Length: 135
Image (cartoon, rainbow, N blue to C red):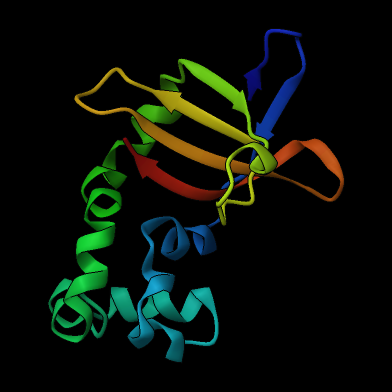
């Protein structure tokens, strides 16, 4: 739970199915053959989907998500050390595909990492993660 300056509280819910998207795996054509997020997770667990086959199929995509992969282990650190919660307005960031309500941020490591979260069920303060990136 995160409290904003105006004392409103944001509740963040994680699900295992968020994992592939946060890593950027949805960007690979080879991953599109999996119908469900749970199928992607299963393929990772049984080692039929790994960095080696992602690199051999689409090295250019892998280059674009290397920061996500490299800093993903810092996600827990971010969640426990949020310095800023920014209300995100996509109309002020054109062009963007990011569909988020808030950005959680910390710069307490060598880079600034962000978790984009989106409100669900028309309740502005119950959120799920939608993207993870570094700057």
